[in-house]
Image (cartoon, rainbow, N blue to C red; front, side):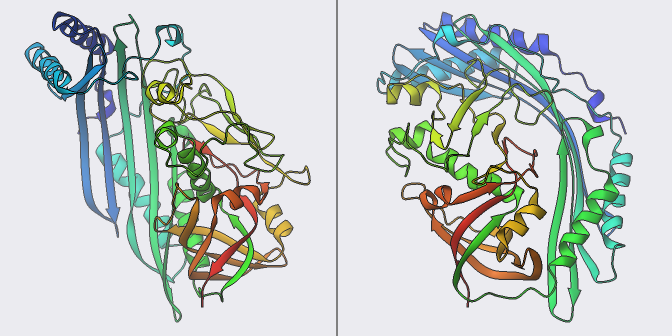
Length: 452
């Protein structure tokens, strides 16, 4: 089989498609227009108990167009990049626009904000991976987990995936730009059993450059260790206690903060952080900043989904909310300026630190916590971004004297996010960089644990 990522991604062809769409929009009488075209390919393989369960090749392309007739807006899309299909797609968008209501906030992002000069962020690291080789790597990963201990007697599988895509965006301001990026990942989930019952857990590694991935043996062993450590889990009685969120879950906690300061939630008045700009949301030591131009990072982007240049900024400084997360439409609704976040945040980092001024990894934060709960899994979606109420099923480990006492399951952790944020006493140095939001372990002074 051919290595899937040897297929070329023709950037010049994709740019020509964007130009053709914009030209068609002008001929249709649009006062402004924008178009985004993408082409990507990839390979994914899933192995369970040594047998190939799925093997998939991906080859996708598509173009989306939005036209404006004054303040009327219409959008349409197609996966056919031939000229006739592009013309029909523009015509469809124009027909839609004629029936939509006028919206004074609709339109392109301001021309002065376009990213006409932007850096190469080292996002493209293709992996010419044969399907046979991908199967071997996935099998090796699962085998490393299954062979780690006799109590591991089942598997939910190991998956390897590799992806490469090119995206081009242009608009009638004369802006056109794009870039190619890759994403490779390897994961494993296994099941262990003893006289107390069965438990499952997982691990994964993801990177733009395959050389930055953990080895199959490392991913498998880590999945096995996490699974074995959960054997013998029990419930807790209802109580209040300190909570330490593991880094991969801390990302989600900070994600709820991001959701509450998004423009859409704010102009709809559906956020517990409404009108909170300039207010202390976190303790004084907390700094959350966006770094879109980190070389090779998963969340890096030279411009946002509207062509607006991205740049470093503090979202939170000294615990105080400095800015929202806005695209041009929500910014206009709020009487503000876009923050270059059409499509989301780009490498949002919460800096390690603590109320005492020091930094520590997870082991150090366990010592600092003394007695409390380390949360390693969250279940359900019990988060209300209008009120800030937070209640989710959880599993993890009860900690005494800074050491693991026993695993716990079938509990709920609850609180109000306003209180949770203010009660953060430390952010760990064990930063998890596997996403757009990067955080270390998050130590909260206290939350409610609902159990027996």
